[in-house]
Length: 248
Image (cartoon, rainbow, N blue to C red; front, top):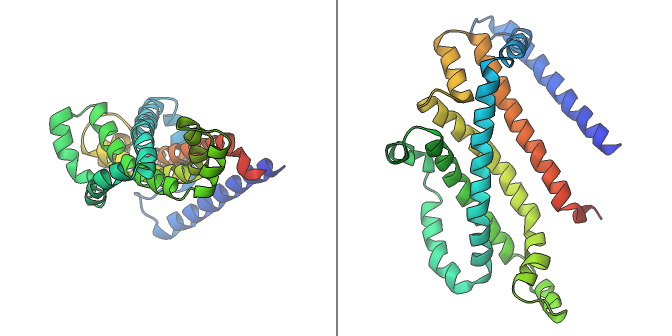
């Protein structure tokens, strides 16, 4: 019953957004801002053609980046949160680099890695990596000593403490970090695809703008929104699967 209600909330929100969009289009009366009917009609036509290809490519780039960031950042964050000498060695470097906007390195990354998928995936991974790393490290440090002592009293050692105490305690905050990182990842993806390349939703949107095909441009924007919504709902499913114990 609750799941059904949530879906109706999403549907209601989309209808409200479309209503605001329609009102804004009628007030502006500008060719560059078509109404939702024209944009959705164009989307329905374009998604059966090249738009679907661009959508799949962008989806692959974001998912690959998130997975690579998780694989690289989570183990390191788990170690930094538990090993003091390693944390004292690595954390100062992380905190020096973390505030620097990583997107400034994109021109260098393109020179070193080329203009294909790898450079785009790398820059997104680099940005998400630090967000996940800092969150994981801080989450580990917040695990209560009493929980760890209780596990040790039951005979847990080494990896068992990570598996049964630390990782479950960190998962909710890690997934929250991924939700926040998702918006950043899609924004960086759009920038990377508009700067260079001939594939992806960013390229599709910019190409439509240059051709003054504004309905196509908004069809691409709708696709970018659907990409974010799809991945966000995917994280909701992952959270329910991994963190179901929170609802007990």
